[in-house]
Image (cartoon, rainbow, N blue to C red):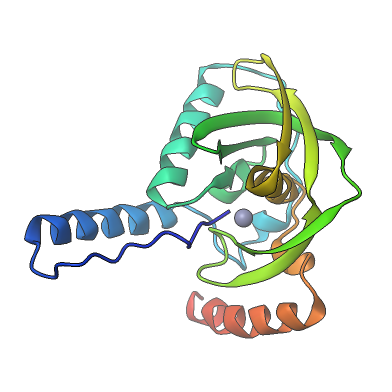
Length: 195
Ligand code: ZN
């Protein structure tokens, strides 16, 4: 999931060191996004398979995904988005990086909330999505150790968004019909240009 709420503006346009830092950050973001599958890629529509081997390769994948998530200014990234069809995602839980393997929602609240979501696979497009406000998530980490999380607010939203990726679902499937039409109008030209 993307996080476009950051404010990258600064006050002094002649602060060259700061400008260079910003330019470097933008370059890192572009390089990271180039490694994230974009809308139209059929892999985003596929269901990821359960992980049954907790080897070095899995730990390296998790490490790489955490790096990509931060470089891309995201708050979550699913393995599907880097072309790996395994049930693994990473997310930033109020400042803490977490790795979830074979995650399952074991409890969801009846209470729902609507908020705008973006996605690192959908460019700048954002749309409102209604989701349960509180969830309990069970799974393991990259080493096979049990993980049990009780989440609300943004973290609850992020894990549901990433879990959707593992099932080939995108926010355009979850938003209201009108927002979906608007999003598709923005996404279609990109699709043609990328061919
Ligand atoms: Zn996403």
